[in-house]
Length: 374
Image (cartoon, rainbow, N blue to C red):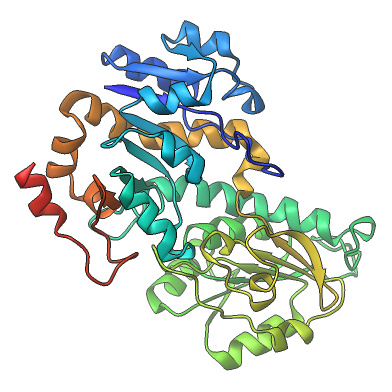
């Protein structure tokens, strides 16, 4: 197969994505399997991977966005293609990316279908037990970054309340409230606890709360995410971490404007659900561009590509998560890989133009039938 690694943000102003979908080490693994890999010149530069490293790994470096998109059978990206990029893709091309189509309208879904491409979303590729193997690596990085982001935003020079995360002798540490006990929530809790913070985790699932309690030997306070508890815990939080995920769907708003208004001025909200619309009402009001901003006196962090802040680490992590899928495609082809690998089927939004996911249509086409007929 021909795999393509394009530059992210080509022709997109104010785009801060620094990651690349495949590192040179990953490209070498694919090439050793017999794959042909096209890499757009400069695609890995922001993550510290130069063109020469890709050449040494066996890739062909090309110099136009149009060539890497137009010649590839499988395009491997970070963010979903924009309308201009979709027009370049040949019918039948596969595209793996963080599509996050739940937050895009029907017009964009129709555009994808009209191009007759196969869209595979990292965020919905799902194991039988419900785990999300590719999203998981980015969520882990986001969770580990939470303490360093929050610590910086709490500083006086950032407009924060001016407290030290771990406190000092005779001075209490920061109170950190985490909404969601999944991958981000767990790793955020571990990091904040390691800094000496008082950590509270809320979730609707008893089993997840029990898991958090076991992992941290009771050092993290757990509570059910009832409306009463949400109002109570958000009111005293110095740092509020939104880590709510409903796979493939728009995140539910669990923190209302009224709750934010009752938070202490200079406190911090990190809404890591922002990729899927945001779980905090005040980040929803900011619009799709997000960023770092102040609303109701509270600092908000709503950055849709947070792992891009550590682009090299994130690119390596994504590469190793993707390699099993890409190697299988090289060995068996895309169609046979999907036919015999249900987790990839669960990650498919469109197949050769057919809408096959219930995340984007109430009447999806039968993907299994399409694969058999093909």
